Image (cartoon, rainbow, N blue to C red; front, side):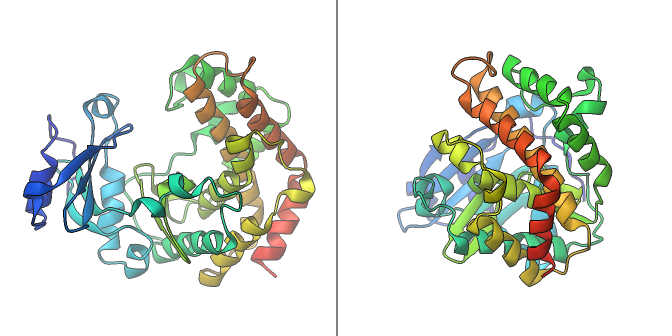
Length: 344
C-alpha cells in the first residue's frame, strides 16, 4: 500500500461519494466545514450525511498529509475493536489522500454539548476511557507508518530552529520560549520525554472536539497526528483536555491540587481499566504527559490570539500555563491519586 499525496487538485465531493456507492447525490446539499484540511459535509434529503476530507492546497504546501489517518481507518478494517472506536468510513483512497465518513449528527458533536455546565458527564468520560483502551489494546505491537508527535515535550532540549509548533504566530513562539525556559515546567517536560514507552497506536490529539458523543459511547476522529506512541500520551491529553475546560470556556482559576481528579477524570480512568490492564508506571507517565499537554493547549490558544499572548487580555493562556505549573508542582501527589484509580 502506498500513502503518497499525488492529487494536485481537490476532487468533487459528490464524485467521491458516488465512487463509494452512495446514491441520491443529485439533491445533496454541500457545506464547506474546512479547517486546516478541505472538509465537506454532504447532507442528503433522506437524512443521511457524509463527510469528505481531503488535503487542502495550503496543508499540502506545508508538507501535511492524511497518510496516518487513512492508515488508522485501513487498520480498523481488520481490527474490530479499533473500528468500534472510529466513525464508519465509506471510502479510503491513500493515493489521492481522500477519506469519506458517515457524518455525526450535529447534537453528537462537542460544539452542541460544551455549553452544559456538567460537561463532560461521567458517562461520556467513561466512554472516552473505554474508547482509548480499545485503541491501545487492539493495536499493541502493531507496525505503524510514523511515530506520534509529542513535540511540546522536547521544547527544552531542542534548538528553536527545530521547533515544530504547528503555528508560526508570534504568540505561540512567545509561549514556547516561556515554557522551555521555565524552572518548573522545563524539568517536567524533559522527564516526560524521557519516560515515553511507545507500544501501540496513539491518537495523538485527543480532545473533545475530535469526538462523536453518544450516550455511553465515544468515537474518535481526526487521526492525522496518530502513530506509534505511548498510551500515556493519549491519557494525558484526555486528562488535560477535561481538567482545563473551565479555564478555556469560562476563564475559571486553575484547579487546586485537591481538585485535579474530579469525577469526570476518575470516570475516564475507570473506563480505561475496564478494557485494558495497565503497567505499573502508567500513572506517572500519564501525569507527566498531562502537564505537557496543558502547555500544548496554552500554545494552541496563544496561536489563535496571535501576538501578545502573554500580555493584557491573555488570561486564558496565562491561566493554562499556571495550571501546568501547579500540576507539575504537585505531580507526585496526583500520580498517587491516578495510581489508586488505575491499579486499585
